[in-house]
Length: 335
Image 1 (cartoon, rainbow, N blue to C red):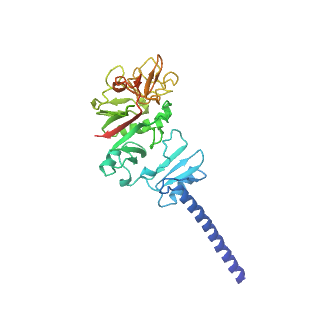
Image 2: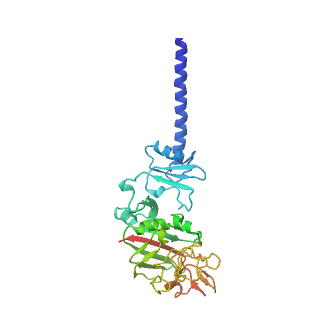
Image 3: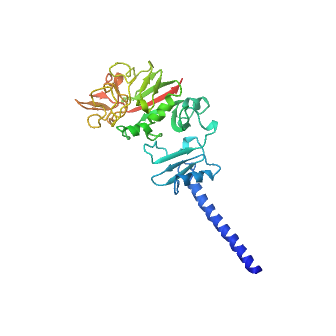
């Protein structure tokens, strides 16, 4: 009887130890794979559901949030909310991802890139911001204290896209991207911002134009643009140069949502692959236009191919054709 009791106790202890060891091995495997290593690489871990992913985070005292891919049931835990190692680096355009965060510590999130810069984060890179009015924090790329909302480098990313893509954003913060109209609205409506438009000419010269204010409405008003006066910059004032073409006061238009003030169809994806914008009789600028690899603005009766800023590309000729900008970025700075 006594020996049998001892055997039962030993078997019970062994079973508990085995289960604990198995859980520990599984936990270590998930922990090692779901957190980023110093190189910024991670494969995540496969889980049963979003709830399972959240429970994994809750079970770990160092977990600050999760990214969960619904399409493949893959879970990434975040052990901090400074997003230099944010997963995914892509700005998602569809609902395949869920993001969840604890309330970040005060020193791990800022209102915008201007606040990050003021607080000593002077290195350009990806940071987490939480503008007033936004229901969630989100990652942005900061450049000299400004928040970049659009970036084009080499034309690898297609900008002729539909409403949902522009609403949620697309591309990679480390490369070409559009931040997303919802996020641009949350940011630009949370304070007074000036806008900087920067463009690289095929000849190598950088051009810029600064406007004293910039904000967009929410989706219920089709992200209508409110643009201030031109301040300075060697690119000149293409946005307000002609009232027939100014985007100020215009609603946003995309491939599948025609809100432009024009009888023409400026974003039909067939004749003109202009990309989303605040069009007014089409436009005197095309920063989201179809990329021109040869650096020239190609025009015909129904087609314009290239990235255009009228006061530069129409009056600074390059080769035998008008110029198309090779790089662009749009930045917002709180004032």
